[in-house]
Length: 163
Figure 1 (spheres, rainbow, N blue to C red):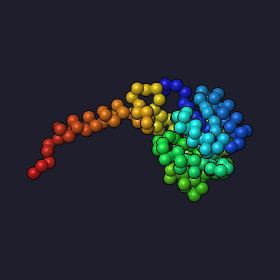
Figure 2: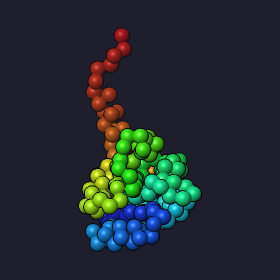
Figure 3: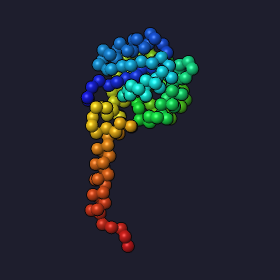
Figure 4: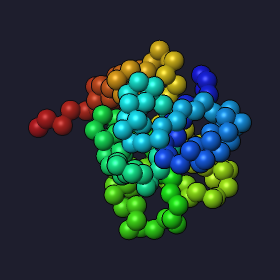
C-alpha cells in the first residue's frame, strides 16, 4: 500500500465524528470529515477518499440519498453505512441496492468498523499514486490491457469454428 487509507466520515453528530476520528487516526488511517450529505459530496469530488463511512440518518439529505448521488459519478467508491439501528433486510434495502460494503452500528466495538474498512480495502483499493491507475475511475489500466492482449492470443491459438 502506498500510504494510509483515506477515509471520509460523514455524520451530523459532532461527538461521534470526534470519537471515531480519534480511533481511526490512532489506527493509522488518514481521515476527513463532513457533517452533511452535501458537504460529503464536495469532499468526495475534491479530496478523493478511498472509503466513505456514511451516516444513514441525517437532516436535509439522508445517507441513502447521499449514496445515490455518489453513485451518479463514482460507481466503485466503497461505502460503509453507519447506523443507530440494527441491520435488517428491509431497513437498508435501498442502500444495499446501490452497493455498500456493510453496516456499522453506533455503539459497537470500533474493531468491527476496522474489519469493514479492511474488507473495503481488499475489494477495490488501488493506491492513487500508482502509475497504472486510470485517474477517472481508479481501474487498473495495465491489467485491462493485459487481459485484452491475453484474450487475443488465446483466440489466435484456438481452431477456427468456420464451417
